[in-house]
Image (cartoon, rainbow, N blue to C red; front, top):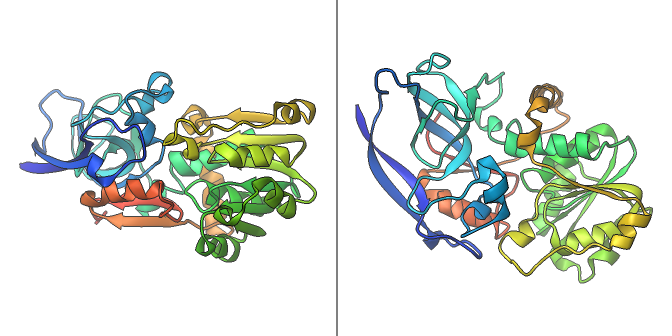
Length: 348
């Protein structure tokens, strides 16, 4: 059987703020059966992840392209690899059968051909909606939050935790993990609606709209009169400077993302190094893909918290492959609340 496989690509490299016109919906015929002797699997894509780090892959050049295997350069005209969930429609790989659900790196497309050695694995849904395995139970969002908070920050009950982009795909979960541990949690977000959401729905102790604050250092002093013990950084830039200025001795900073700098090459975080040295603040970056040895631990603890209703998923789902460019561009305009996902097809 042959189908017309639609997929999203970039027209040219993107070195600034992305626009919907930078993307193109293309189509090509695809035979839905593997060739004899092939180890490929053909997957019908169900849900795909929309992540801000992808903009670095779309640039003419970026350090991510040189140093991170899964973040290599995207070639204009070629389907864009992304994390997601799909269903096997044919397999030459003995580890997969027709009808299996798989999770891992597929494409912004209706169908993907996953070569032998691809970063995918069989998915056991363990009683949760399939979309959860792209977000709260996925490696780009859920595992990133878990590793960054528990391994990098090493939190203790009662500590004071500040999270930037707190209503985003990673930040919202970090805040929920922190509250489940008994920490005091404040988040920065980009609207009054998001302030209400993280406080009323997710249980944060407080939150503020950073767009309404003329002086971020003073704002954090108000929310943390006794100082910050942990800062989970999703944005970089001025927010990182302000957080470091308000941190307690032996504070920890988990550098998860720098979205404020992705589309503005001249905007860089410049925390006071005297503060970092003399307050012995530890700033550590990390990538979730480097901590796959913690995946089972993460999955077990997160599922337990979900079952006990101590945390909840926050998903922002759009429908249709044609809406991927709109969803992606929206990340840089603050449109998403929680994990941004596009549903390509129903899981049936």
